[in-house]
Image (tube, rainbow, N blue to C red; front, side, top):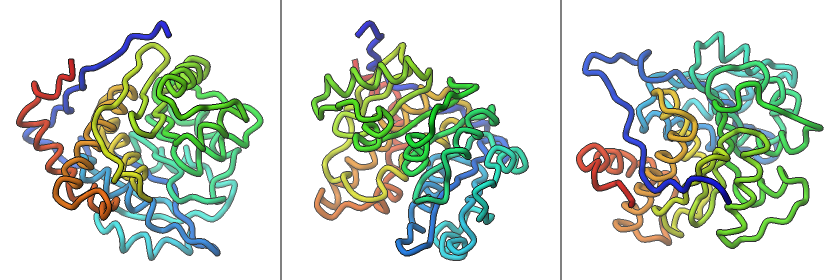
Length: 292
């Protein structure tokens, strides 16, 4: 595959003793919907995952019908509404002073292909593209990222197949690595292809995650991961390092939750509860996380 295989885990971002909330990442999360099928939990899980991962300020942008419900689920985040398909996400991110935009969780049809194309061309900060934002990109005629090294896409296999426009994707790990590498090389973004043994690649390096368990195959798990990665980017990690560290610590939280609660009953809310333990483990035993 001619890509460097990474087994080490990037260190946690440094946090100054006198840091304030503006120093450790301002995140704009765009998602949520409340139509016939409401998805108000997804952006809240992303926001709470980001805050549990060290983000200083988080704002959720969501359709006005969903806003009061989303706000209740993420009380430490601020909210703003949008309803127009012409709403400029990049402009809103600049107005908020966002370091990172995480777009897609629970968005349904509220995010259009044009909005995604414009965001990738118009925002120079970090961008994490998940869920329905990935589906919107898959419907776009063509897209490129103006600053691809600041962009992370986090598809599950079904979303990856849509991005590949019908090209086959097998479930075995070797084929997932091959497809992920080819896509990352073509687009120059960092790709997080989720699943058992999540694959992270920027086209030059590749990492296969070793943490996590089958109990994490539950709704909302990916929304939490999006928040974790976005928060780490907001604290200064590169897109690739944030993605590697993000999937590792997300899996650690899942392993701790499964050990205490079992895999059957594990939910995304449990991942939020066990993220502090995972980060504490990394702070206290950084050398033990070298996976060589």
